[in-house]
Length: 442
Image (tube, rainbow, N blue to C red):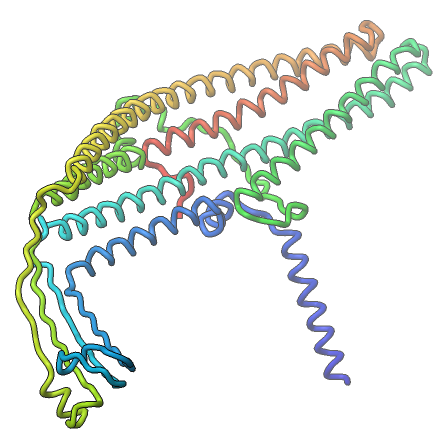
C-alpha cells in the first residue's frame, strides 16, 4: 500500500510538472518555425507530393523490367467439349488441367520508357523545390505573425503604462482641486481619458489573443489558452542588406528563391512530355517467350507423363506499326507543344514577378526605415510637448481638455513608433530572404 501511494505521488508530481511546463513554455521564433516545418498541413501536403514523385520514379525504372506472368486452370467438362489434351470433341464428363507461363520484353518503343524515367527525375527535383518554397513561405508567414504578437505585447505595455500615469494624474488633480488650483470639472476630462485608455487596452489585449491564435493555427497547436512566445528583444539595427543594390539582390534572388527554379523545371517537364508524346509515332517491338502444358483424366497416362508430353513453347518478336489511331498521337503532341508555350510564358512571368518583388521589397525597406525614423522624431517632440503641457496643467495655466489632447497625441506617437519598428524589421527579413539569408539559422 505504501509503495502504491508513493507511485501515485510520483505520477501526480510528474503530471503537474508537465502541465506547468506546457503553461510556462515560451516559444522562440526559431522554435515556432521548426515546429511548423514538422506539423504544418501545407508542408505535409508538399511532402506527400515529394513522396509521390519518388514513387513515380520507381515506377519508371520498373518499366525497364520484363513482364512475367503465369496462370493455371482446372475444369470439369460435361457434354460435348473439346478435350484440351487431344484437341478432339468428346461427349463425356472429364476433368482437365492446364498451366502456362509467359515473359515479354520491350525491345523498342520510341525510347518512351527512357524518356518517362527522365521526366520522373525532373518531377522529383521540381517537387523538392516546391517543398522548399512551401517551407520558405511558412517561415515568412510565421515571422510576420510572431512580430505581430511582439508588437501587440508592447502595445499592451504602453497602454498599461499610460493608464498608470493617468491614474497618478487623477490623484494629483484631486489634490490640486482640493487646494483650489484647478476647477472640479477638470476631473471629468481625466476620467474620460482613463476610460478611453482602458478600452484601448482591452481592444489591444483581444488583438493580441487573436494574433496568438493565428500563429498557433499555423503551427497546428491546439492549446491556444497557454500558448505564448518569448519576450525577445528585437532592436532596430541598420542591416547591411541596405548597402546592396537592387540589381545585386535580384541576381542573388534568382539563385536562392525557388519560384524561378520551379518554373524552369515545369518548362523542362513540358518539353519532356512532347518527347513522350512523339514516341507514339514510332512502331513498337516486343520479344516474347511462353511455355504451356496440359492434362486430362480420360487419357490413360499419368499426370506427370501428360505434363511432360503435352507441353510446348512459343517465342518470337511482335511488331506493332501505328497507321491510324484516330489522330491520338498527333493531338497529344500538339497539346504537349501548347503546354510548352504556356509554361515558357509562366517562366517569363515568374522572372518579371521576382524582379518586381525585389525592387518593391527594396523600396519598402527604405520607406519603412524613413517612417520609423520620422516616428521616433515625432514621439520625441510629443513627449516634450506632453511634459510641457503637464507642467502648465499642474499650475492651472492649461485646462484638462487640452492636456488630454497632448497626452493622446503622445500615445498615438508611441503606437506609431512600435508599428513602424516591427514593419521595418519584417521588411528587412523579406529583403534578406531574397538575398539568400534564411529567416532562421538552423
